Length: 65
Figure 1 (cartoon, rainbow, N blue to C red):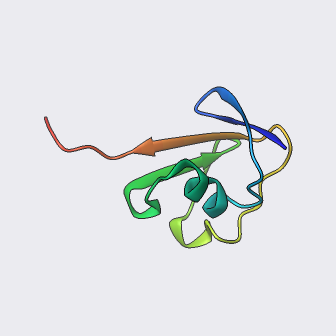
Figure 2 (figure 1 turned 45 degrees about the horizontal axis):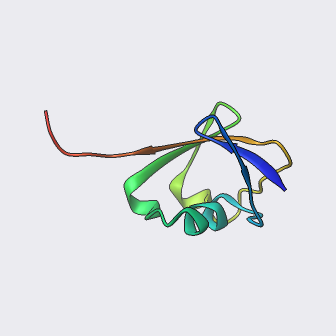
Figure 3 (figure 1 turned 180 degrees about the vertical axis):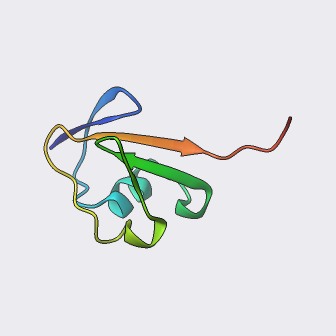
């Protein structure tokens, strides 16, 4: 399956948002995820499915000013 992560096309075997984050090596507690222009609640990562050509934005939190 192909999805777009932060604007870049990516082949993936992930079926949920949580699977995709694990594949990316991203700690789910430290990011916000938008799927098709809708924010996904952190508690819904495990149950939110991905579809072919889904558009996902992963935003990491950073410290600083």
